[in-house]
Image (cartoon, rainbow, N blue to C red; front, side, top):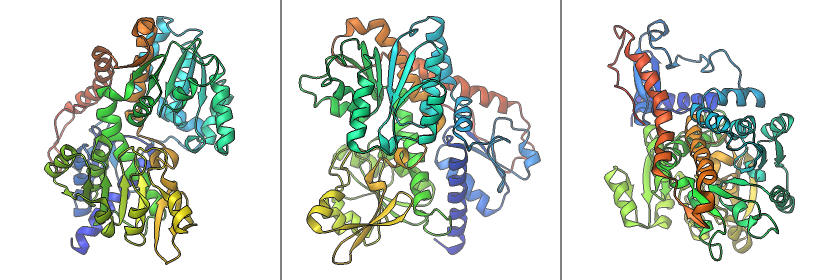
Length: 497
């Protein structure tokens, strides 16, 4: 890559990061007008297209005005349409305006009075989109309470929800003992319905006296959570809807949203001043090529990173090869030359002490998605004498007695959730739409389903996507009536999710 092309790709990286940080909105499937026809603007257009955006270039902002409902990239102009997104209330209001699926499905529940008076407990990453779901359920007549793990709690959002009458069991500063107390207090409310992320609360409910007595059922959000439920002796004793397995969730949340939000969060942590480390030309190793790994790799490549994939499943490895990535059989060997190492497996002990020692000195290590101990830094401290040295926000250097060191982001936490604002709003609108559909299934069929994990009915899954699709198509129809006389590049047709 020449110095000039590197500069152009770096421009695209920085604009992508600013857009994601300002709006927490989706790139894929949305309309983007890039103002300017020079090489750096062409690089931005190409990067956005590679992420799945529908892009046109225009000579001026005036020309782009003919295309309503389009995100306009015009230098340093704000993406917020004259609004602010600083306070918790403002961030919740912004998210509310971009979550039509949740609004539609919650309205149905309210009109049918399906959840009126029911105690609904939510254990999700506590950020603006979660707040929208909680407030929407409360407006529909439910008694809503929220628990969140300390590392997944936005203290400002928690306080705002409490001020609005939602019972909150969350403390971003809680130690493990206090977090366990809060979880048990949450479960002692004799909940009727439970929404979980990671299945830690569902599993805990099986060991808290009375927690299952009035529980109609639960809904589980994640791949790792469903794996964890399989470890429960005898399986779940209540119906659990596998929200994660719905296509409206996995195809978009795992494969699109997590890729975008993890890449933007990682770059903002490593390069907070926007004047140093760049993904352009960086050697990036992705461990695991399921939906999360695939989405992450796609966004890295769109920004100019060089991706190597390692997956022990030969079918996943073959898919990475067919998608055009370098594939290696050994993670220990792959990390030796990597600038950035990202685990996307959802399994503990993916990044072992051997890999930490083998990694290129100064390499950055992060987790996309994730479970506890996915990066085994604890063993490096206990057995290898490594110590932590602070570097910056959510970034520490793990230093060994022999001078070797690696930089670990947020101690291996699920990086977009523990150090970012979670997945883009439109993506969580889909995921939470599936959660609302799961609640409806539990209320309709919960008594008949029986204990165990159950899929969400295909018809309910398809309805979530249909509501979202109608919103995207509405935007496309608005575009189809606009003049294209001033386009620098031809447009792209009607989107589909």
